[in-house]
Image (cartoon, rainbow, N blue to C red):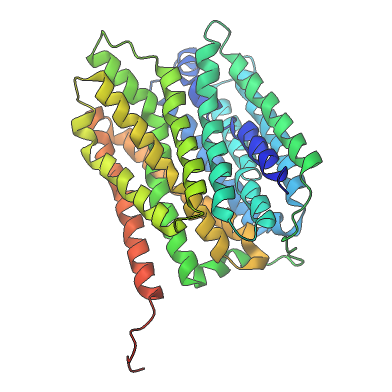
Length: 397
């Protein structure tokens, strides 16, 4: 078992590099297709919508519970890698490009939540630590295309899609060949189209899920608009000359390290405590962002973004752990998948609304809106804790 976790983490990292492959080269794609700068929001939303559709199909058909998760992961990785290469087709138009990003997202539904299902099948206890590393790998994988773009700036932009697709194939093979089905896996024998609803009948599951939903309102919008934040700062301070692609990688990647850190801390601190603390801190970052993003100090500006990049992601594995541990055993994979489905649907609304709002308010003020997610997520935790608290001694029934 000690060798299994590194393989799952590595496979997750390699495969999720597909997620922001389009974002890393969004400026090149927009120029080639003569699209406005806001095209990056459509690229991101296309992947998210594909992921939503994929998770819905995977959840309704209970694919991760009825079939070998490692095989599901492998075939999904191959399909996603192939669709990702559609970016490079000669003469591809904007509509076709968005369709390829949609399909890439669809098959990512067989990678991210299924990877968490595999981890849960190996970890009866200490799941928070496992998911800390697993979600950390997702975050680093998401950031990786920005690093590729930065270090291969002299190469054609098509190299990013080629490299990420190749990495995804390697990740799928690693999962298939090196990770057998876990000892705690319970196979769902029959197709039950309503199985995905079973978790929401449980108070602990609902509290964890709604906390995750609040977290997702903020997370991907922050990631998607990071290049715009950095570019806006460069425009306002011509002497700054911040390397946008490289810093986007570092700022998103910082969240991966925070996920791993929260996973390790979960061995001595309750996951719910870690999740609510990170959620509160990221909400605070949203509230003070209009002031900090106007700072004249580049060092303070970047320090704030690094801090925000860490706390905005640190609660993700904790909420995923709480969802997995509170879900019904026989439908754990389906429960994780449907929660991901709803969470990513929320990201599309957040990204598109923020993009629309950018036409009316200054960039520095956009991210106040993101505080709504953490606020509602914290409210769900407080409400859930009140419902689960034992009745005081002597209370009459």
